[in-house]
Structures are given as C-alpha cells and as structure tokens.
Image (cartoon, rainbow, N blue to C red; front, side, top):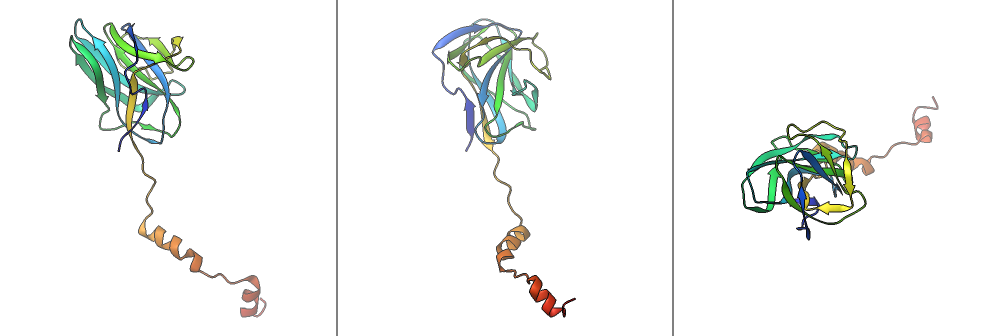
Length: 188
C-alpha cells in the first residue's frame, strides 16, 4: 500500500507562481521507502506550460534519481497532476526532512494554506535541467503548498533459511564451561 508525505489536500489560497523559479516546500517523510511520484495541484488557463518535479534533501542537494517526468499541460488545467519517477527511483530515509520541488516555464497558479515557519521558498533558475545543488533559496514564506510524494515502504530485510535456522537453534547449543574444559583435558 503506498504512503505519502506532503500536503495531500487542495489549499484554500490560490496564488500565482512565476516561471523560471524552482519552487520548494519542506516536508518530513514517514517511513523509509522508494518514491513513485510527486503530485501538485495546478491551475493553468493560458498557453501550454512545461512542468516537472524533483526531490532535494535537507541540505538542498539533489537526491539521486530524484527527477520526475516532464509534462506539457494545456489551457484549462485545474486539478492534481502526478509526475512519475523513472525506472531508477529515489529512496527516502525514515522521518527525514526533504524539499519537494516543482518547476515550470509559464506563470501558473498553485494552492496553499498556512504552514510552518519558512516551509516554502524558491530558487531563481531558468527552466532547464535540475541543478545538483545546493539550492539558493529566497522568498521564504510560512505556507505549505498542495504538493506531496507517494512512495512504497521498504520492507525489513528477510533472513535466509540458513540465518533463520541458526537463530532458532542457537539457544539449544550448550557451550562447556572453563572448568569442564580443564577436567576433560586433564588440566592443560
């Protein structure tokens, strides 16, 4: 069953977001896992717009394999848009801060609510390839945008049959004491 972290509902405040700026919102992951997608609530009513998402770590560094597909949205978009990661998916650690990022080449509208201090910020970058980081964040605001990551929890490592057998018989193994060893060897 997939899990999420981020803001999974549409915010009450509609706000224009300028192009050529990487927009980020800071969230804390739940369990460790492998990301499947990032979803953003976007409203757009003029020309076509290119949009893509990514994930950055708490040091604002690009996470390995952390960029999604790019989509071309057409006029009339008003709702959730999901951006999938490629075949090699990024991983997240448990209860760790990450920046969920979205980037587009035309003005769009996104939705937010009041958030934690400095939860949102931007990095002025002409729309192109994702920078490795660290991002230079400006325009911090105490709002959280409607953006979230979907991921699958990584199951605990399974023990092999040999490991399981050794663990189950370990309590049955009786080791001799030093006194027994000395008695059996004649005190040598």
